[in-house]
Length: 338
Ligand SMILES: Nc1ncnc2c1ncn2[C@@H]1O[C@H](COP(=O)(O)OP(=O)(O)OP(=O)(O)O)[C@@H](O)[C@H]1O
Image (cartoon, rainbow, N blue to C red):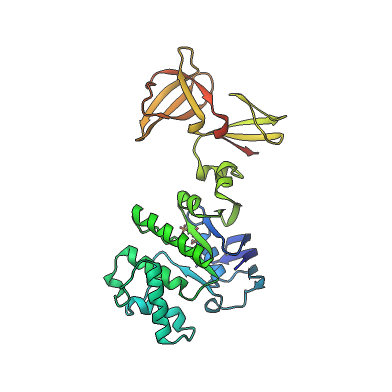
């Protein structure tokens, strides 16, 4: 179901935690809330679920304001990092619990639990207790329980953070599979930019209780709205410059670009810098760091107060102490309006 937050502000212990948040999630969309620790991601999920009350604004679900509807009647469900399964119940009882409280009879609850166990690839586990399951299996049970009552919005609060890399990958795939199959509008809270880029239709980047940018993964990566967003996703060196008549002019280089006139910060990513040896080179290689498939070079300008980084293939013959010049790869530059 379509979800909208309109001018949501939340104050906790006299501190404004969310500041006039506006966000629209289309029916069946998967979005991520990404941002540094403490920026308000979990508070936003809890506000949507009705666990925290906003002091201003409205939560709108399927076109209806749900501010006065208690959490258990909203049909939103949160999967927390620690899963919060009931230890005294079997796996099937845990999964069937949301249906039981809706008044569904015992046999139907069990039937649905067994059907969902198949979906999360845990056939035959219905009579186990939670303490007899591994971390990854517990997470699958938590996911099955979350979708048992067919929520209108699924809220995932860093559910993958305790898993190792391989399990994480499997769980991401499973979540996306189920989310698409049941067409559940889903919001994932994560610190992990790669996770957000891989999984989401859109990313809302949050900082200090506000949404700095809300757009597709590709767009947020290639066109960050400001340096706060850019610094979270990318590394490199900024130079200031100006675009006039489709040409970026700066103290380091001038280059053709297809952008509006104005002052910009240009982020020179390591992938945008191609060094080549030259005895009249402007840059000195001060550091060469092995990174597995490639090397990261740190290049100090001998003329300006400027350091660039460059990623070069592992077969490079460039050494620390060499003098180099650099070619700038236009497509890898990021321009941020000032
Ligand atoms: N019940 C509360 N009372 C007072 N302050 C709170 C409460 N809950 C959260 N906060 C504060 O609100 C801010 C945002 O917290 P929140 O948990 O939403 O951030 P987050 O982005 O999810 O962080 P993390 O990524 O570390 O989980 C933090 O400064 C936190 O200390």
